[in-house]
Amino acid sequence: MVNDWPSGTTRPAAGQMPAGIRLVSLDRRASSRPARLWYRYWLPVRVAFALHRAGIRRSELASVYLTLGQWSLTMWVVLRLVVRRPVIVDVMERFDPQQFRWGRFDARLLRHRWQTYLAAHLADRVIAISTELYRRFSHRRPTLVVPPQVDLSRYPPSSAPPLAGGLRLLYAGTAGPKDLLAVVVDAIRQLPAADRGRVRLTIAGMTRAQAADMSDLDPACLDGLDLQVMFLGRVSRDRVLAELARTHFAVLVRPDAGYARSGFPSKVPEALAAGCPVLLNHTGDLARYVTDGREGLVLAGPSAADVRDGLLRALTLSDGEWWEMSRAARSRAADFDFRAWTETVSKFVVGAHRDVGASQVSRVLGH
Image (cartoon, rainbow, N blue to C red; front, side):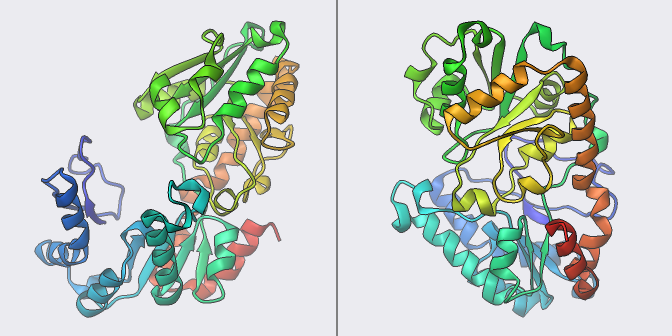
């Protein structure tokens, strides 16, 4: 695995990497925007030199794996000339114009669409996060659908308190333009006063000021809800896992838009792994994994009224009913545990995709 090591994070000590994975880190010493652009432009050459310095011979490689963000025409040329091994591109999302300030002319969208085009025409194989993306690539390239992965062993069992003490909700992440937080807050406001007093929404990953700047939340919509909505700001992953363990429902609301149909929110398998049912509307492949009343409560749509109705349902649950959902959520999370996918992905990566492609797609499609 060759990549720039994220700034502000701790490198794993020797022996802490998963078995079979070797980390070759590219030190990035500059932090200014021009320097970052320079490093990004020369990434293909830096990767080739890093492999050489690490003493990795071409004969040791079965293929090269890249995320879509690392994929470029220059990267393809360098890998073809130097490494000369099949290239696998991992496509985890598809952007829509409405997600960007300048719409269809925004530079980030244009770069994303160009990278997607290159992946469809130059990559040897593609890993897609959803069946919607599978349909976009499979007619041109061998494609495997792999949803977000979790390590079930890292999630503590649920310790959610009795529902009589109030309904605990959690949104974890930085919403950006993807997730609809305003409708969740509006839904809480629409609840009858007695029910509204029993609901607590915790937002982990953003402060109140950041939410106003980075999401669809208008600060005015939070007026009078100080007891119902709490912001934790940026927190550690361990804190998020602890919050999930004592939460009744993880909340996720997305519109029926192209990016929602193409993506697969990693928040869902993470919540399920923690035994935390989800309160969401179906988009993309979510309907294949979350059944209403089993792994969570499925909303009729993405409006505030739909969320309000879901909250009213949640407030009527008994502790026994909730614990049944929690156990079902944890059971469903086994479908996302990386151990269940090791053989399938390994075969695809080394080129034995004819053995796994059709059967794995059928599994994901539910056929």
